[in-house]
Length: 636
Image (cartoon, rainbow, N blue to C red; front, side, top):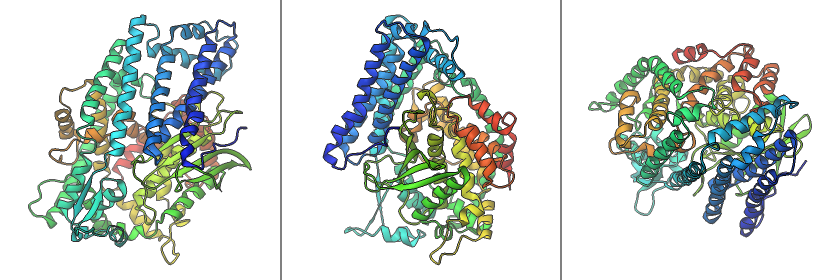
């Protein structure tokens, strides 16, 4: 088995490392494609094995290029990696439109293939069709140019968000309400003002705790202007190009094209899903917002609406006053090093894994490295890049570094977050468990023979379900008491966790409605590209937004999912329905090792080697149900 990735110790050698670990992989992919078309007689198995080799070569190079473009501290390296990511996506596009290559695969016969090879062959032929390989040479060239331009736009769109940090300056007294550690970390500058950025470690605590509504509004407004105006024309062009690609391929619209390979099955089904959730969430969301507004008016009698500058603040105020949960008091139990170790230990016990710290060079000194072992055998490696820095991806996500291939390469995955180094919000702990769900899926699912099925390569609208399920462990008393302690070493009290759980039922309607708002925007923009992005967004917000809009903002410009997820932001709510149903299997407690192992084997380990609906039914013993989600939504 090949050794794990070895990174340069000398920063000056990173360009050479990119050449050998990324660009050489693309060259290998091109050479393998040429071999497939060289006229040599080959069996079906030999053709498919060569195809798999190209997937491995190009896929590994692509994964690394996309990762380094988002996390490397050197802007020149990020730029070079971004160029390589573009080259990888272009190569995938060219392969999919190569008619000679298609004829090689189409001439194969499924007779005698095992189930995995048969599935792989079907997927290759399906993807050829979806690329437009059967169109005229002129149409194929046009489709290639469209796909290439979409990739260029996507990379630029993401870069503008990553690099588009905004800053405001406030008076020291406008930090009233913030925790002492936050205030200590944000001293006034020579001008007597405190600088606050739109990065998560500043923005989320400030919006949650700052007593000054005008200051909260100022920072929230800047956040909703991220990447504006630069991304507005890019998004408009991207929507137009996607619509054109779908039409050329014979689809009604982009959502119809995109959902053909997802669980939901059709673009119209997204619209139906939105309508179903609209009916479920409208009343609860209205009630939640009315409760927040009534409390807001106690502080500001002239208040007329709750905006996204107010909801986090009054959510925690109401939880403190009505549910006896003080978020700042809760923070004392969550220090990053203990949370990190607690998450690792929880996953270790649940799935029978061992995480062994490794001292190894990486792209940044703050990255921690662990080998993952199962019954003494190493099955992968994980990297935790968890704290903010300039030029780094500024949300939370899991990236692949090395896709796992049975007998050839162990999976390596990377968690990229922006948590504080000290005290964390409980929401951060929930996010940690969520993102680690992707990471453990990458590792445990990374023992497939076929690159197209390895790791998290399942249907895209199922991929969030394992992560959303793992969030449940962040609310479990026994789990939290295993690592959450205060300065005196006292574990978080069980009655506090119980109150936190009760408080978490507040504003579920508003939270779900906000997710539905994003879902409707993602779908609607792609169903029919609007002439006026701002006007369309305002109309969607008017119908679905639980909170009043903030004038003269352009959230779509900084809505990164519009590039990566396209019309499929519905994935988060669709997967949440499944996750709540998966939770129902843990009837004897979340740390039940028997159910944990069965879940590992039935849901995570297969990767994408079977349809997600079949994996779920295999685990639950029945098809998935909407009922647990509805019960969760209305729980009091």
